[in-house]
Image (cartoon, rainbow, N blue to C red; front, side, top):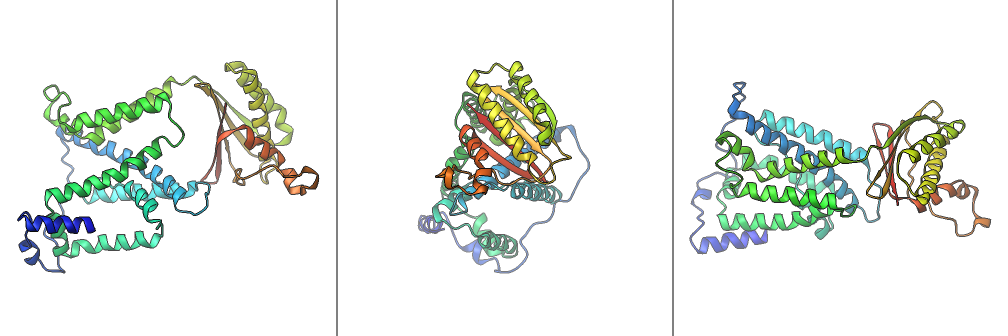
Length: 373
């Protein structure tokens, strides 16, 4: 705000900004304009525009999920596990916002990643700040004077404001993309989609080859680059080696069945002896922990094991809410350890042989996934 005020003052001194439009509008009143209404007169010329908005909606939805995860990681003084129930609520709110935007005849809504950088810089993560901001946005259309001040911003001032936003969005975006490390696939996906988006913004993406109607889609950097990222993600997913999938009844008595399925996965996948040992230990310990949970006798555990780029990825889905698996450590002295600590000794060993352990509870179902070297 201080920078924008300084830019407006400089623009006024140089004669690029006048207060005439501001003085001619009241502080309180209806902002000039009208609702465009709805039309069902769909034409083929509208299809590229529809595709652009559809891609933007999907991209903004993915961005909302990533922002929700990032905000949870920086909004607390102590590290906490990501609450995927909050992310589920974010998806619902984003969907309702997109429906309202479509009915009102505007573009899809977006959660801006630069707010994450603002949280890091200021250390302020109170929800009341967001509530106050929402109230200001609701009041803004009923103040023509303030609205006209934003509309009449000089281009240099507005450009500097966008540059500041872009500077804050860049590190936040990189943190989301490379939070789990950089592989040749993630690097290739980000590089290609970024190049496609930059070329699309230059309006030089095969300008004489496609019809004018299609250029509305190809000239949008977000739409073209986002579509490239989505297509590459699908291609990389299809290129992955086929894994092993099984459904196993939950219960200590069914532990031999789990061992048989793990052996079948080992025979199907090309694993080293150390990976086989780690896979058995991790799967068996997690299965015993789930089987000891209350209400698990009549449930089924979905198991998926994949091997890609030298890593083993194990995914488990259980239809009950489980305790948090993170934070278990080995007792300092096994001889003086409490019985409760000894009961969790297996989980402490489990945490020492796996990495990138994640646990999510969505709609009452527990999703667990981890990787093994």
